[in-house]
Image (tube, rainbow, N blue to C red; front, side):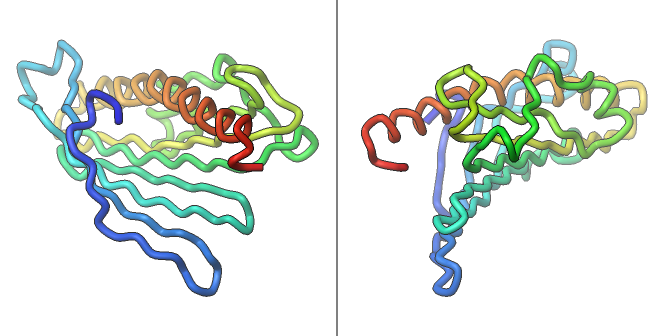
Length: 184
């Protein structure tokens, strides 16, 4: 567990008897981090995060959707990561460095694809392996139009920064499981 995650509780977990999909809902408490310019306005110490995941062993997909429950009026972030097998013939790679300007995309459309990372080993684009597709929706409903775009841009930049770190960590775990022949 990352050091900014204070608690993680499983709310529900079940396997669909027809599809075999494992459904999990977790509630997490994380440290609330705000930019320096916002600390005087928002006294945020912690944030509640809802995570809903589906692990489909038949189609070999893992989908994780997270959404903040706390402070959603200031900034609502809903992020979806979909992890699938990757074959270069069926997937168009979008390198993290080649993504569109996230700030402009967020201001024009709160439903933003952040990145798709096909990789077979940490950081290397693959021809076969595992792909992670990440999309996010970032919306600030503050009454102050002058800071709304700053809040959304901050959210987008933090997602971009944190997504790269978490994706590399997740890919490392997947590669280790493959190396140890615990998964195919």
